[in-house]
Length: 145
Image 1 (cartoon, one colour):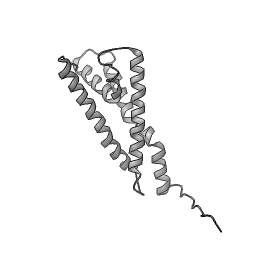
Image 2: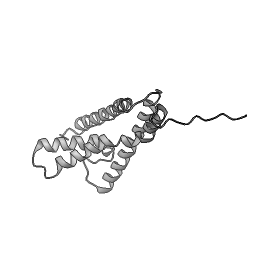
Image 3: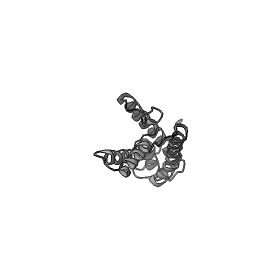
Image 4: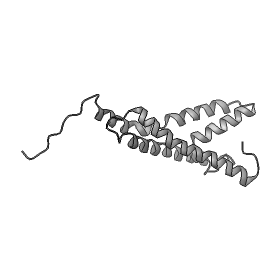
C-alpha cells in the first residue's frame, strides 16, 4: 500500500474546533468594531450634548480607524467616508485572520484564545488611533474633540 490513510476529523473534536476558529476568525473580528459603529450612530443621531458628541466621535474613530487617513474628522466627503470604512473593514478582517492563526497554534485552541490574541492586536490599532488624534491636536493646535 503506497498511500497514507487520512484519519477522519471528529465532528466536535480539537481539529474541527481549530478549523472553525480559523474559518470564522476573520469575520468574528468585525463584531467589536460593528458594535462600536452602532454605538457611534446611536450617540451621534439627534446629538445635542458635548458628551454624546465626544463619545460618538471616539467610538466612530475606534470602529473605523482608517477614517483618519482619509481626512474624515476635517472633511465630510461621502466618497472618502465610504473608502475609509471599506479600508477599515479590510483592516479588521486581516487582524481577525492573524488573530485566528496565532490562536490556533495550540492544538487545543478555543475562542477564548482567539479573543485574547484579537484584543492584543486591536489594542495596538486603538492605541494608534489615540496617538493619531493627539498628533492632530498638537500639529493643528485646535481642539479636535
